[in-house]
Image (tube, rainbow over all chains, first blue to last red; front, side, top):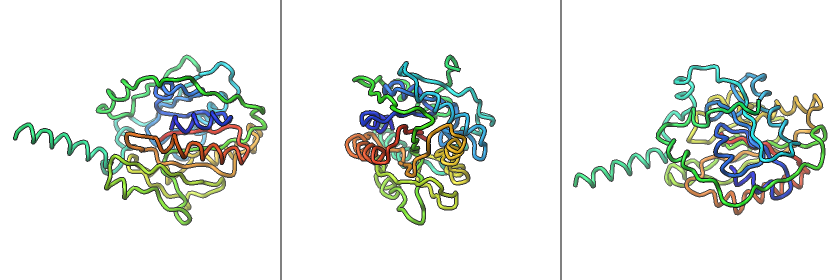
Length: 115
Length: 169
């Protein structure tokens, strides 16, 4: 997504990135970043929690006119679900194809090592 | 608030920590557009990588090809107009549990939230067209860089958008 943000900035339109991984956004030299400590899939917070969603949205808007760029602001909201449950619940119901592929590669290497 | 720092890796699987923590700073310089109108007059568009599409009007992202070719991810995008309802939304994304996005798309694409901010005069307006990509691009995001980023920028300029809020999922 940083490459999309760069293309848009290049065209003269300002961007704000709202992300669970602000450190990565910084490494891509993006000018305006909002960090949220939420499970993947939820950059604006919990379903039906308008207060939380607005907090993330309004934080993004505070960066619009900032002149001291790059700038990063993290939203001080803790996810209100115990970590292990939240960690499990954002993940897909079956492993993504790349995960299966990488596991197969490891197994293949292991088998070749035995052979 | 500016001194507070979140943990970027809190919900990332531990097996991926090494790769992400070692990710180098990209070469080159920061690219910055300076806004030309105040926020109260700005037109804001939203972008998600949550794989959202309009299930009765648009094809889903090509997750069947991704199943066959795990190193490939669909680089195309869907235009999501403001005013859509949850019943119109589908999600095609193999790297997330999409239940919450289907229950309330505002968790990833907060169209209702920004429409509310528009009504309150906090922004000039929410754009009519908003954008959805599918975040997994395999080892290369060249298609985004070389084609779809430019296409997106052209569309945003045509609609006189002043600010794009991007939210990777």
